[in-house]
Image (cartoon, rainbow, N blue to C red; front, side):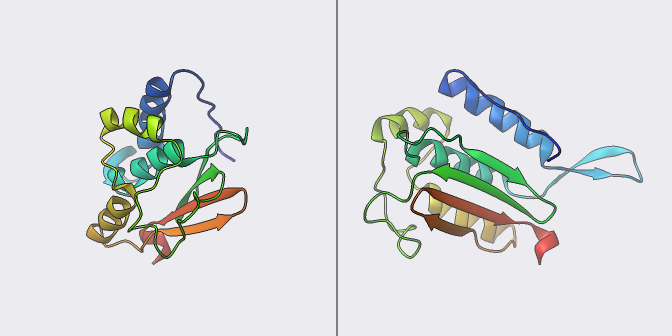
Length: 151
């Protein structure tokens, strides 16, 4: 692990801090020019929607944190709790059920549209990147976004 950042506090501050931290972590470094380039490894709207979904749909009965792991070729967002009842990896883009509707309503101020999963898929597609992968277990949901290094 290169860096671990724990964000604690009110949800708006956590989301703003997470977006700022991840934006800095996901930039490309150009060794020839000795500076960071503006090139994105992942569309911002894709990974931020993934983070918003993790916050909205996680199980708050499970005390584990939401984690985001960044690798050379992919990014993983792990959210505590399985999919809400009725949602599967096959119907996730067609389903708008939420586990925590009050949190979802509050997230709207951060640009959440209620179409987060569809937006993640469309942003990745528009960037020419592989489709997002959802892996669900009884205690977690993992979103995997792959970048150009994985192609």
